[in-house]
Amino acid sequence: MTASLTPVLTARWDEPDSFTLDGYRRAGGYRALARALAMAPGDIISMVKGSGLRGRGGAGFPAGAKWGFIPQGGGKPHYLVVNADESEPGTCKDIPLILASPHSVIEGAVIVAYAIGAARAFIYVRGEVLHAMRRLQQAVAEACQAGYLGTDILGSGYDLDIVVHAGAGAYICGEETALLDSLEGLRGLPRLKPPFPAIAGLYACPTVVNNVETLATVPFIVVNGPEWFAGMGTEKSAGVGIFSLSGHVTAPGQYEAPLGITLRQLLALAGGVRAGHRLKFWTPGGSSTPIFTGEHLDVPLDFEAVGAAGSMLGTRALQIFDETTCVIRAVLRWTEFYQHESCGKCTPCREGTFWMVRVLGRLERGEGTGEDLEKLLDICDNILGRAFCALGDAATSPVMSSIRYFRDEFTEHQKHGGCPFDPRAAALFARDGGMPSAPPGTGFPPASGTAGAIR
Image (tube, rainbow, N blue to C red):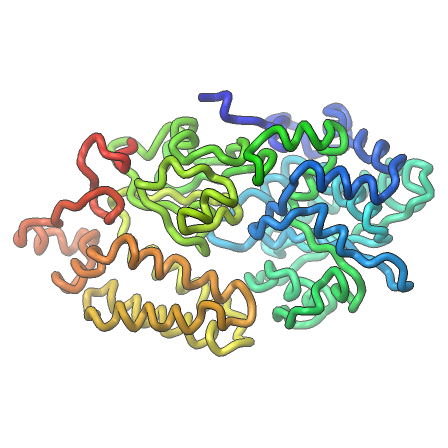
């Protein structure tokens, strides 16, 4: 089963000096930059297109195609912006990558900036992660001193400056246009599109916004070739990715594997669900993606298969929950986050998340009715497709999917006037005969030997 792991970005994370310039160069770092600077910019874009690399920030848009949208000529400067504003609950791959290997991000950024004709790049980091900020600033200083940044990089005649910028901790700034507004010194609010950033981005100039993991992957493609990367993963979801396992799992952490691996395989690598418990539900791509249950253990974790099964691969943040978890309480906590982080620009998201929290709270306390469930779905329907940006739509995903798979659990809350998973209610449920049994995927402990009974 260990053959399922394919460490590329994470191969040297366990080395004590992996974050230093010497440690990175000892592993072959900056060889890709020298090779890329000897190529024509268009050839680099074609190489990445041929590799099949798709954005690792959640949307999964083909990276090479995104760079190709940058218009040539026109006299406007071009910019590269690295999105390191990792803010979604459960998503925790980019900050560890920055801490362990900041130079891979910088090398990738220089290559991409050269390919799109940018003379300045920005790395936008969530301001609370001060340790990651310092590590990036140190790496930028080392790269400048070694001639990998600044003027006439490696004697190629190409100049590039990288600015490390701290955000103020707003979830909305993970949305690329809100991030650009924040960089310009404005309040982080999503922009109306079109125009898209490739045409009018930072300072109304052509701009590429890429995720940390996307850029860190580029040097490996340049060194090993597009066929090497395309040979891993699946036909339409090429390459490897970092899968972040958290929650009720024996060995939580980062697992780098080809796209298309299943949760069953990842759980085997991670020691399974914590001892004595069974899988109840999980997120395939962070808290803003529709939840899955035990029946989805063998869904290939790639963009197409996860989408066909009714969710999104997103950031590959796999949050694992066992049978002791109240799904309504978990969804309520996520929705409270989305209400708090709503930028307030559009009515559907601003008002919709507010009312979803109120209705979910009522249902979780056992004070709701069947009409509240329909009201909740109606609120979701009025947000979905009507919010100004995708973050409003995403807030509806856990709500709708929890009702789809766990409607009976909502009913039990109503029936007993409280949460079945609250220890204070144990006596009440024992008196009433306890929680009813149910098939896998409905929220209750499945029978031994079923697909949901992963230990």
